[in-house]
Image 1 (cartoon, rainbow, N blue to C red):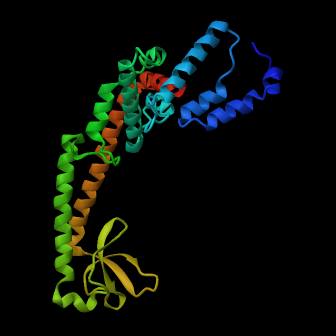
Image 2: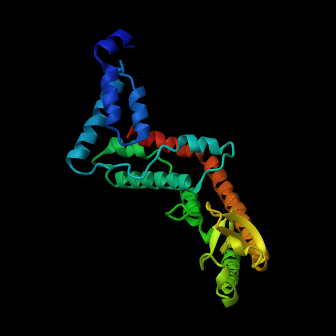
Image 3: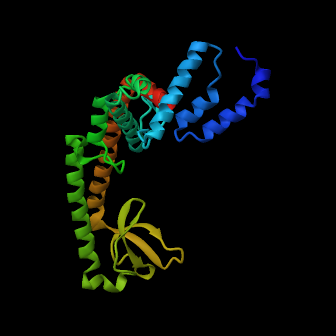
Length: 274
């Protein structure tokens, strides 16, 4: 084992800090800080051969970047404890596994040219079933798809219908000629998660409803007309149902990540080494 004093004299830690700065992958940065020189001749020669092979890849233009990959080990391990993973992080997991799979397949085709790198990437686990499950449920904008579950599709259909009914009713109210003098603006706005209309404070009570807010000047009141209370309630109830179903879908995907956590962590470790 190399003595600590020798490492400091050689400024080894400064060198590895520089290596870490040049790594594009967070897992690689971490590994660079942890790596120590070897005193085993066979291991040293293996490392030199690996390095020479990568230099060859770079010179021949066949090196592969880790674009889209993330160090998702902590998230994967937390999934074992049922810590729900948000949609954008599930995408990170999918992209990481997908990028790993691409590198593995491409290097498998070039095993004759780069045998050591191909051998390292053979240990990458693609976890295709998890990739497919995430892709089926989460779109590229990190939104849960309507098709993620039959129930979510029904809820969102009902939400659209409920929203249209609510907006149509509010529009009919603000377009009544008898109400024009009471309105501050001919518009529909949201307050406290409810759709309301702005009326002049001087005409409070002229349009029966629930006051949800007022303007800073006090000149405008934001009223939820009584005719739309039930429609607002229904729309809000469906929103809560949607949120609940989305959490259930994310929980199911989290369980899948937890089941595959060892494979995910191993794959990230290989990417870090690369």
